[in-house]
Length: 143
Image 1 (spheres, one colour):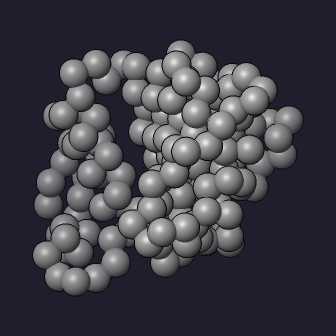
Image 2 (cartoon, rainbow, N blue to C red; image 1 turned 120 degrees about the horizontal axis):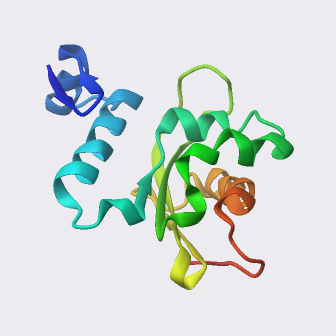
């Protein structure tokens, strides 16, 4: 078992890193927290959205989204990294993770997926949903 800040990784979670199995949300969030706290020189300008928070955005009306995410101070971040998966249901699940990164200085969304474009439709939808809460100006581009 390990912990970073407020996150705890249980034994069964940590075993997923050793055996050739799928990583769960806890593993992904633990890794993101590690990068944030142990690898970044200026973490205050970066936000790694939690998988759970981002998944919640799929089910909120757009009118409630900015208020629900207000405490994340999205409009003050230079880089926002959003983990996305192919789960369309409300329950935990999905079979593949990818990342969408929003770089404010360039007004660009970048898509990172080890399986090519398998989660492209989810990434595109996420960027459209998150544009307003991020304060992304019109005319954003994709790379």
